[in-house]
Length: 159
Image (cartoon, helix red, strand yellow):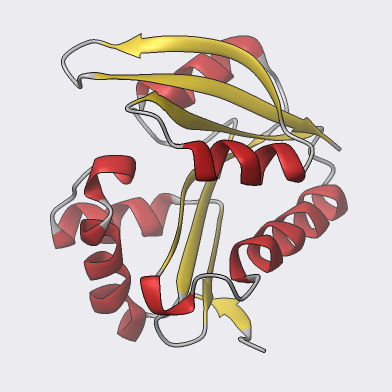
C-alpha cells in the first residue's frame, strides 16, 4: 500500500510535473508558482514518491482563486481541496480515497465543519463527479469561470 506523507522539497519537481500533466483539470502553474501554492497551503499530502498529491487551504488562506473566494463568501469554517491528482500509473489503487480519508481525519481533529471543492462540469469530469459523490460530497453551487472556458460545480462534505 502506498504511504501518505507530508510534502518535502525533493517532491516539488515530480509533483509539479504531475500537476502539469493534468493542467486542464487543475490549472497550469510555473514551478515557482506551484512551490508558492504548496508553501501557502494549510494541508498537503503526497502518496509515495510520485503516485499522488492533495493540496488544501482553509478559510483564512492566502489564495486568490475565484473558486476559493466563493467558499470564503459562503462558509466560515472549511478546508478547500484546491487540487487532488493521481498519476496514471497509480490509478485504481485507492490512493485518492486514502488521501481524502486522511484529510477528513485531519479536518475533524482540527475542528473544521466541512471539506469543500469544485469539479469541472464543462468540460465534464464524470469520474471526479462519481468519486466525490461516493465520498458523500453534495453540490452546493455552480459557476461559469469567465475567461477560463469552463463551468464548475461547488461541492461540500459536512463533517
